[in-house]
Image (tube, rainbow, N blue to C red; front, side):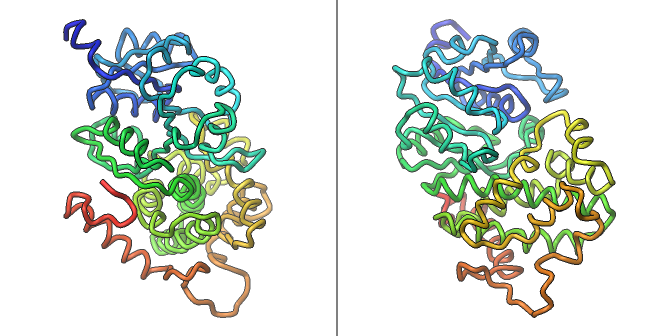
Length: 378
Protein backbone atom coordinates (compact mmCIF):
# COMPACT_ATOMS: atom_id res chain seq x y z
CA UNK A 1 0.00 0.00 0.00
CA UNK A 2 1.33 3.42 -0.93
CA UNK A 3 1.93 6.15 1.62
CA UNK A 4 -0.85 8.20 0.00
CA UNK A 5 -3.36 5.33 0.29
CA UNK A 6 -2.35 4.73 3.91
CA UNK A 7 -2.84 8.41 4.75
CA UNK A 8 -6.35 8.27 3.32
CA UNK A 9 -7.41 5.47 5.70
CA UNK A 10 -9.31 6.63 8.80
CA UNK A 11 -7.08 6.69 11.88
CA UNK A 12 -8.24 4.99 15.06
CA UNK A 13 -6.54 4.29 18.38
CA UNK A 14 -6.98 1.31 20.68
CA UNK A 15 -5.81 1.85 24.26
CA UNK A 16 -4.93 -1.52 25.75
CA UNK A 17 -3.25 -4.46 24.00
CA UNK A 18 -4.61 -7.49 25.84
CA UNK A 19 -6.52 -10.20 23.97
CA UNK A 20 -9.71 -8.20 23.40
CA UNK A 21 -8.02 -4.88 22.67
CA UNK A 22 -5.71 -6.51 20.12
CA UNK A 23 -8.57 -8.46 18.58
CA UNK A 24 -10.64 -5.30 18.22
CA UNK A 25 -7.68 -3.59 16.64
CA UNK A 26 -7.61 -6.41 14.09
CA UNK A 27 -11.35 -5.99 13.50
CA UNK A 28 -10.86 -2.29 12.79
CA UNK A 29 -7.82 -2.84 10.56
CA UNK A 30 -9.59 -5.55 8.58
CA UNK A 31 -12.47 -3.10 8.18
CA UNK A 32 -10.23 -0.54 6.50
CA UNK A 33 -8.85 1.62 9.34
CA UNK A 34 -5.28 2.64 10.11
CA UNK A 35 -4.96 1.32 13.68
CA UNK A 36 -2.48 2.34 16.35
CA UNK A 37 -2.46 0.25 19.52
CA UNK A 38 -1.19 1.51 22.86
CA UNK A 39 0.54 -1.15 24.93
CA UNK A 40 1.72 -0.45 28.46
CA UNK A 41 4.80 -2.63 28.02
CA UNK A 42 7.38 -1.56 25.39
CA UNK A 43 8.20 -5.17 24.49
CA UNK A 44 4.56 -5.93 23.67
CA UNK A 45 4.27 -2.78 21.55
CA UNK A 46 7.43 -3.82 19.71
CA UNK A 47 6.14 -7.33 19.00
CA UNK A 48 2.89 -5.97 17.54
CA UNK A 49 4.67 -3.26 15.57
CA UNK A 50 7.55 -5.32 14.20
CA UNK A 51 6.34 -8.90 14.25
CA UNK A 52 2.59 -8.35 13.76
CA UNK A 53 2.00 -10.80 16.59
CA UNK A 54 0.76 -10.74 20.17
CA UNK A 55 2.01 -14.15 21.23
CA UNK A 56 1.13 -13.72 24.92
CA UNK A 57 -2.57 -12.96 24.41
CA UNK A 58 -3.35 -14.22 20.89
CA UNK A 59 -0.96 -17.10 20.19
CA UNK A 60 -0.80 -18.20 16.57
CA UNK A 61 -2.59 -15.13 15.18
CA UNK A 62 -1.04 -13.01 12.43
CA UNK A 63 -2.05 -9.37 12.76
CA UNK A 64 -2.76 -7.10 9.77
CA UNK A 65 -0.01 -4.98 8.27
CA UNK A 66 -2.14 -1.91 8.97
CA UNK A 67 -1.99 -2.49 12.73
CA UNK A 68 0.70 -0.48 14.48
CA UNK A 69 1.65 -0.21 18.14
CA UNK A 70 3.49 2.08 20.52
CA UNK A 71 4.00 2.36 24.28
CA UNK A 72 3.73 6.15 24.04
CA UNK A 73 0.11 7.11 24.70
CA UNK A 74 0.41 10.49 22.96
CA UNK A 75 1.65 8.81 19.79
CA UNK A 76 -1.23 6.35 19.78
CA UNK A 77 -3.87 9.06 20.21
CA UNK A 78 -2.45 11.58 17.76
CA UNK A 79 -4.91 12.24 14.95
CA UNK A 80 -7.32 9.49 16.04
CA UNK A 81 -10.84 9.85 14.64
CA UNK A 82 -12.18 7.24 17.06
CA UNK A 83 -10.66 6.04 20.35
CA UNK A 84 -11.32 2.54 21.72
CA UNK A 85 -10.59 1.69 25.35
CA UNK A 86 -9.76 -1.87 26.41
CA UNK A 87 -8.35 -1.66 29.93
CA UNK A 88 -9.18 -3.76 33.02
CA UNK A 89 -12.17 -2.06 34.65
CA UNK A 90 -10.44 -1.47 37.97
CA UNK A 91 -7.59 0.40 36.23
CA UNK A 92 -9.70 2.54 33.90
CA UNK A 93 -9.91 5.68 36.02
CA UNK A 94 -6.15 5.85 36.55
CA UNK A 95 -5.43 5.39 32.84
CA UNK A 96 -8.02 7.97 31.81
CA UNK A 97 -6.23 10.63 33.85
CA UNK A 98 -3.35 10.28 31.41
CA UNK A 99 -5.68 10.24 28.38
CA UNK A 100 -7.63 13.39 29.28
CA UNK A 101 -5.04 16.10 28.48
CA UNK A 102 -4.13 14.36 25.22
CA UNK A 103 -7.66 14.57 23.80
CA UNK A 104 -8.71 17.92 25.26
CA UNK A 105 -8.93 19.44 21.76
CA UNK A 106 -10.39 16.30 20.20
CA UNK A 107 -14.09 15.47 19.77
CA UNK A 108 -13.56 11.91 18.56
CA UNK A 109 -15.99 9.24 19.80
CA UNK A 110 -14.76 7.30 22.84
CA UNK A 111 -15.69 3.62 22.67
CA UNK A 112 -15.64 1.33 25.71
CA UNK A 113 -14.74 -2.30 25.01
CA UNK A 114 -14.82 -3.08 28.74
CA UNK A 115 -17.29 -5.27 30.65
CA UNK A 116 -17.12 -4.45 34.32
CA UNK A 117 -18.18 -2.01 37.00
CA UNK A 118 -15.87 0.00 39.20
CA UNK A 119 -15.55 -1.80 42.52
CA UNK A 120 -15.39 1.31 44.68
CA UNK A 121 -18.26 3.25 43.11
CA UNK A 122 -20.36 0.66 41.28
CA UNK A 123 -20.24 2.88 38.18
CA UNK A 124 -20.48 1.49 34.68
CA UNK A 125 -17.50 2.08 32.44
CA UNK A 126 -19.25 4.74 30.35
CA UNK A 127 -19.97 6.66 33.55
CA UNK A 128 -16.32 6.49 34.61
CA UNK A 129 -15.29 7.68 31.14
CA UNK A 130 -17.73 10.60 31.33
CA UNK A 131 -16.42 11.60 34.76
CA UNK A 132 -12.71 11.35 34.03
CA UNK A 133 -12.67 12.74 30.49
CA UNK A 134 -15.23 15.47 31.25
CA UNK A 135 -16.96 14.74 27.97
CA UNK A 136 -20.50 14.76 26.64
CA UNK A 137 -22.19 11.32 27.10
CA UNK A 138 -23.32 11.58 23.46
CA UNK A 139 -19.68 11.19 22.48
CA UNK A 140 -19.37 7.86 24.32
CA UNK A 141 -20.26 4.45 22.88
CA UNK A 142 -19.99 0.92 24.26
CA UNK A 143 -19.47 -2.37 22.42
CA UNK A 144 -20.81 -5.67 23.68
CA UNK A 145 -21.95 -9.09 22.50
CA UNK A 146 -20.88 -12.73 22.19
CA UNK A 147 -17.27 -11.83 21.52
CA UNK A 148 -14.69 -14.39 22.60
CA UNK A 149 -11.45 -12.79 21.48
CA UNK A 150 -9.53 -15.77 20.12
CA UNK A 151 -12.45 -16.98 17.99
CA UNK A 152 -12.83 -13.54 16.42
CA UNK A 153 -9.08 -13.21 15.92
CA UNK A 154 -9.37 -16.45 13.94
CA UNK A 155 -12.02 -14.65 11.85
CA UNK A 156 -14.90 -16.85 12.94
CA UNK A 157 -18.08 -14.83 12.16
CA UNK A 158 -19.97 -13.14 14.97
CA UNK A 159 -21.96 -10.01 15.78
CA UNK A 160 -21.90 -7.26 18.39
CA UNK A 161 -23.92 -4.28 19.56
CA UNK A 162 -22.66 -0.70 19.50
CA UNK A 163 -24.67 1.44 21.90
CA UNK A 164 -24.67 5.18 22.58
CA UNK A 165 -27.20 7.69 23.85
CA UNK A 166 -26.51 9.39 20.50
CA UNK A 167 -27.80 7.48 17.48
CA UNK A 168 -25.30 9.36 15.34
CA UNK A 169 -22.37 8.20 17.48
CA UNK A 170 -23.59 4.60 17.54
CA UNK A 171 -24.00 4.59 13.76
CA UNK A 172 -20.56 6.12 13.16
CA UNK A 173 -18.81 3.58 15.37
CA UNK A 174 -20.81 0.66 13.94
CA UNK A 175 -19.86 1.63 10.39
CA UNK A 176 -16.17 1.64 11.35
CA UNK A 177 -16.22 -1.53 13.50
CA UNK A 178 -17.40 -4.08 10.97
CA UNK A 179 -15.90 -6.29 8.31
CA UNK A 180 -16.55 -9.58 6.52
CA UNK A 181 -16.53 -11.62 9.76
CA UNK A 182 -17.70 -9.05 12.33
CA UNK A 183 -21.19 -7.56 12.06
CA UNK A 184 -22.39 -4.67 14.22
CA UNK A 185 -25.92 -3.74 15.28
CA UNK A 186 -26.84 -0.53 17.12
CA UNK A 187 -29.11 0.64 19.91
CA UNK A 188 -29.39 3.58 22.29
CA UNK A 189 -29.83 1.52 25.48
CA UNK A 190 -26.38 2.04 27.00
CA UNK A 191 -27.52 0.89 30.45
CA UNK A 192 -28.84 -2.45 29.20
CA UNK A 193 -25.92 -3.04 26.85
CA UNK A 194 -23.32 -2.39 29.55
CA UNK A 195 -25.06 -4.28 32.32
CA UNK A 196 -25.61 -7.24 29.98
CA UNK A 197 -21.86 -7.43 29.45
CA UNK A 198 -21.18 -7.17 33.18
CA UNK A 199 -23.87 -9.52 34.51
CA UNK A 200 -23.23 -12.41 32.13
CA UNK A 201 -19.72 -12.64 33.61
CA UNK A 202 -21.18 -13.36 37.04
CA UNK A 203 -23.44 -16.11 35.71
CA UNK A 204 -20.48 -17.54 33.77
CA UNK A 205 -18.52 -17.81 37.02
CA UNK A 206 -21.44 -19.81 38.48
CA UNK A 207 -21.44 -22.09 35.43
CA UNK A 208 -17.72 -22.59 35.80
CA UNK A 209 -18.14 -23.50 39.47
CA UNK A 210 -20.71 -26.24 38.80
CA UNK A 211 -18.64 -27.45 35.85
CA UNK A 212 -15.60 -27.70 38.09
CA UNK A 213 -17.62 -29.64 40.65
CA UNK A 214 -18.68 -32.07 37.93
CA UNK A 215 -22.38 -31.30 37.60
CA UNK A 216 -24.00 -31.81 34.21
CA UNK A 217 -26.02 -30.03 31.58
CA UNK A 218 -29.30 -29.89 33.54
CA UNK A 219 -27.66 -27.86 36.30
CA UNK A 220 -25.96 -25.54 33.82
CA UNK A 221 -29.11 -25.01 31.77
CA UNK A 222 -31.03 -24.16 34.93
CA UNK A 223 -28.43 -21.60 35.99
CA UNK A 224 -28.26 -20.01 32.53
CA UNK A 225 -32.06 -19.72 32.32
CA UNK A 226 -32.56 -18.36 35.83
CA UNK A 227 -29.43 -16.26 35.40
CA UNK A 228 -31.02 -14.50 32.45
CA UNK A 229 -33.97 -13.65 34.71
CA UNK A 230 -31.61 -12.17 37.33
CA UNK A 231 -29.80 -10.17 34.66
CA UNK A 232 -33.04 -8.80 33.24
CA UNK A 233 -34.53 -7.88 36.62
CA UNK A 234 -31.36 -6.07 37.64
CA UNK A 235 -30.84 -4.15 34.40
CA UNK A 236 -34.49 -3.09 34.05
CA UNK A 237 -34.45 -1.82 37.64
CA UNK A 238 -31.70 0.59 36.57
CA UNK A 239 -33.54 1.80 33.49
CA UNK A 240 -32.58 -0.72 30.81
CA UNK A 241 -34.97 -2.04 28.18
CA UNK A 242 -35.76 -5.71 28.74
CA UNK A 243 -35.38 -6.39 24.99
CA UNK A 244 -31.69 -5.53 25.22
CA UNK A 245 -31.11 -8.39 27.65
CA UNK A 246 -32.76 -10.77 25.16
CA UNK A 247 -30.38 -9.65 22.39
CA UNK A 248 -26.70 -9.94 21.61
CA UNK A 249 -25.51 -7.98 24.66
CA UNK A 250 -27.55 -10.15 27.01
CA UNK A 251 -28.57 -13.65 25.95
CA UNK A 252 -26.01 -13.85 23.14
CA UNK A 253 -23.08 -12.92 25.37
CA UNK A 254 -24.42 -15.11 28.19
CA UNK A 255 -24.49 -18.24 26.03
CA UNK A 256 -21.02 -17.65 24.57
CA UNK A 257 -19.41 -16.88 27.92
CA UNK A 258 -21.05 -19.72 29.81
CA UNK A 259 -20.36 -22.50 27.33
CA UNK A 260 -16.84 -21.73 26.14
CA UNK A 261 -13.56 -22.82 27.76
CA UNK A 262 -12.09 -19.65 26.20
CA UNK A 263 -14.10 -17.58 28.69
CA UNK A 264 -11.90 -16.22 31.48
CA UNK A 265 -14.88 -16.03 33.86
CA UNK A 266 -15.88 -19.60 33.12
CA UNK A 267 -12.28 -20.68 33.72
CA UNK A 268 -12.10 -18.80 37.02
CA UNK A 269 -15.32 -20.43 38.18
CA UNK A 270 -14.12 -23.87 37.15
CA UNK A 271 -10.98 -23.44 39.28
CA UNK A 272 -13.17 -22.41 42.23
CA UNK A 273 -15.34 -25.48 41.69
CA UNK A 274 -12.23 -27.66 41.72
CA UNK A 275 -11.41 -26.38 45.19
CA UNK A 276 -8.93 -23.58 44.55
CA UNK A 277 -9.14 -20.61 46.87
CA UNK A 278 -9.94 -17.17 45.46
CA UNK A 279 -6.36 -15.89 45.83
CA UNK A 280 -5.00 -18.95 44.05
CA UNK A 281 -7.45 -18.50 41.19
CA UNK A 282 -6.34 -14.90 40.71
CA UNK A 283 -2.70 -16.01 40.62
CA UNK A 284 -3.40 -18.70 38.02
CA UNK A 285 -5.33 -16.40 35.66
CA UNK A 286 -3.07 -14.84 33.02
CA UNK A 287 -5.71 -12.22 32.27
CA UNK A 288 -8.39 -10.37 34.22
CA UNK A 289 -11.68 -12.19 34.87
CA UNK A 290 -13.92 -9.15 35.24
CA UNK A 291 -16.70 -11.15 36.91
CA UNK A 292 -14.64 -11.75 40.04
CA UNK A 293 -14.24 -8.01 40.68
CA UNK A 294 -17.84 -7.19 39.80
CA UNK A 295 -19.68 -9.55 42.17
CA UNK A 296 -19.59 -7.37 45.29
CA UNK A 297 -20.50 -4.01 43.66
CA UNK A 298 -23.30 -5.59 41.63
CA UNK A 299 -24.83 -7.17 44.74
CA UNK A 300 -24.61 -3.83 46.54
CA UNK A 301 -26.44 -2.13 43.68
CA UNK A 302 -29.04 -4.93 43.64
CA UNK A 303 -29.76 -4.45 47.34
CA UNK A 304 -30.18 -0.71 46.85
CA UNK A 305 -33.01 -1.26 44.36
CA UNK A 306 -34.48 -4.36 46.02
CA UNK A 307 -33.59 -6.87 43.29
CA UNK A 308 -32.93 -10.45 44.37
CA UNK A 309 -29.96 -12.20 42.75
CA UNK A 310 -29.66 -15.58 44.48
CA UNK A 311 -27.26 -17.10 41.94
CA UNK A 312 -24.88 -14.16 42.22
CA UNK A 313 -25.23 -14.21 46.02
CA UNK A 314 -24.07 -17.83 46.01
CA UNK A 315 -21.13 -17.02 43.76
CA UNK A 316 -20.05 -14.44 46.33
CA UNK A 317 -20.36 -17.03 49.12
CA UNK A 318 -18.10 -19.39 47.18
CA UNK A 319 -15.62 -16.55 46.58
CA UNK A 320 -15.70 -15.71 50.30
CA UNK A 321 -15.19 -19.36 51.26
CA UNK A 322 -18.50 -19.54 53.15
CA UNK A 323 -20.18 -21.99 50.74
CA UNK A 324 -18.92 -25.32 49.48
CA UNK A 325 -18.97 -25.15 45.66
CA UNK A 326 -20.95 -28.41 45.59
CA UNK A 327 -23.79 -26.70 47.43
CA UNK A 328 -24.44 -24.06 44.79
CA UNK A 329 -26.76 -26.23 42.68
CA UNK A 330 -29.55 -27.09 45.20
CA UNK A 331 -30.15 -23.37 45.81
CA UNK A 332 -30.70 -22.11 42.27
CA UNK A 333 -33.31 -19.56 43.29
CA UNK A 334 -34.01 -19.39 47.02
CA UNK A 335 -33.89 -21.26 50.30
CA UNK A 336 -37.66 -20.66 50.62
CA UNK A 337 -39.63 -23.81 49.79
CA UNK A 338 -42.67 -21.82 48.69
CA UNK A 339 -43.33 -22.53 44.98
CA UNK A 340 -42.48 -19.56 42.80
CA UNK A 341 -43.41 -18.51 39.28
CA UNK A 342 -40.91 -18.14 36.48
CA UNK A 343 -41.87 -14.58 35.61
CA UNK A 344 -39.35 -11.81 36.16
CA UNK A 345 -40.17 -9.08 38.65
CA UNK A 346 -40.46 -6.52 35.85
CA UNK A 347 -43.40 -8.39 34.38
CA UNK A 348 -41.69 -9.95 31.39
CA UNK A 349 -41.85 -13.70 31.06
CA UNK A 350 -38.72 -15.38 32.35
CA UNK A 351 -37.36 -18.88 32.43
CA UNK A 352 -37.66 -21.25 29.50
CA UNK A 353 -40.35 -19.23 27.70
CA UNK A 354 -38.23 -16.09 27.54
CA UNK A 355 -35.19 -18.12 26.59
CA UNK A 356 -37.01 -19.81 23.71
CA UNK A 357 -38.48 -16.55 22.44
CA UNK A 358 -35.05 -14.93 22.67
CA UNK A 359 -33.47 -17.77 20.68
CA UNK A 360 -36.24 -17.52 18.08
CA UNK A 361 -35.62 -13.78 17.87
CA UNK A 362 -31.88 -14.31 17.40
CA UNK A 363 -32.56 -16.83 14.62
CA UNK A 364 -34.91 -14.36 12.94
CA UNK A 365 -32.18 -11.72 13.07
CA UNK A 366 -29.75 -13.96 11.22
CA UNK A 367 -32.37 -15.13 8.69
CA UNK A 368 -33.37 -11.56 7.91
CA UNK A 369 -29.86 -10.14 7.87
CA UNK A 370 -30.54 -8.16 11.04
CA UNK A 371 -33.82 -6.58 9.87
CA UNK A 372 -35.87 -8.56 12.39
CA UNK A 373 -34.11 -7.04 15.40
CA UNK A 374 -36.38 -5.14 17.74
CA UNK A 375 -33.88 -3.63 20.15
CA UNK A 376 -30.70 -3.87 18.07
CA UNK A 377 -30.83 -2.08 14.72
CA UNK A 378 -28.44 -2.92 11.92
